[in-house]
Length: 140
Image 1: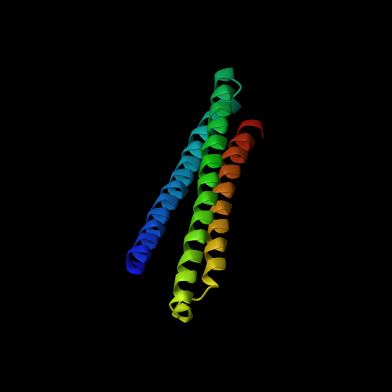
Image 2: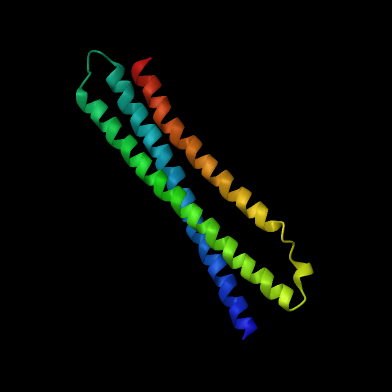
């Protein structure tokens, strides 16, 4: 029975890692797309001869979507982090009960937490860049 529980926990960890990867990639790609689109729109809007309020509205819509997509991604990463933490604590307890905990360094839990923090930082940096750069192009 322990083997089946172990397999189930490892399977859940793998599924969580795949899901986290999807959210990170989605957020990064979306941020880069918004950066490109909003920079192009801002460039057009900066030209006084072709200025249209539509350009500014498009930028605002993309910024709102950017906030939503990044909020969802960061929330998903937070849930993934909590889930991974609980599953790994379960594995550590199982290893301790079976006197094999020395083979899994519990400090890895902190490393996983740091990794999630770094992923979140990358997403936030790109999100800020995707907002600030087009604003600079538009108004400076």
